Image (cartoon, rainbow, N blue to C red; front, side, top):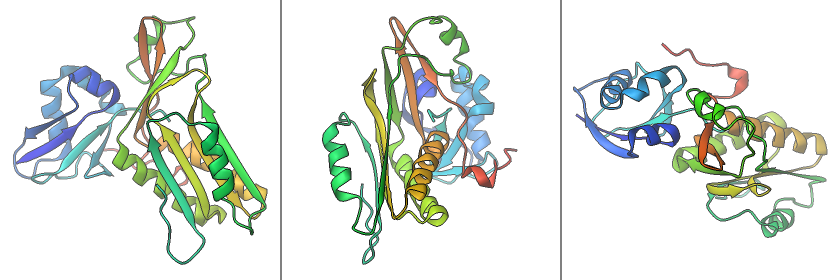
Length: 258
């Protein structure tokens, strides 16, 4: 059978390709696909403990069986549109954008997200800082070569279809936990220079506590679960940043990886 494999971030860099089909025996597991890929790209072997898998845009364990035509995405350590619900007042706006996040967007959120029933609008803006973060597993040597240097910018990459699904799931969790029904999560891809915004989260609610809680939950879960990667750029090089992706909400705990 044939399975379509997609790579991102450091794995794409190591392999030198983003997408290709591989042939496997019928009924092969995800782990068998991983072993076949390691045979093609031996550098992958060192990443096994930090790589997650997504089968047809859903996180999946290594023992899960694949079928003809499946899409298998390897999820290396992650950086840590409006979906109206019909007749009610819910608004969940999730976007991955290439263009810079400008003040016009913040003004738009201020004008469109809160309703007359909302007494609070909390907006979180994450931006590129000049001090480096923790390198992703396997990137420690590259990070050491830039010790003492300042970051000149970030480069973001995303598995957009799955990232949007994760963001919407986070929005659903926020509604259930905090009762916040009007939320926007907007994340950049591409180059984001120092001082520029990489992510905006806005939550409108009748009371400020819920709006603050919603923003904090959204950014923490996004950074842990969404397949979005970032590389810190320095003069003369770059380092991938992040940690092993978490498959679900923090309060459910990690699912065991066989």
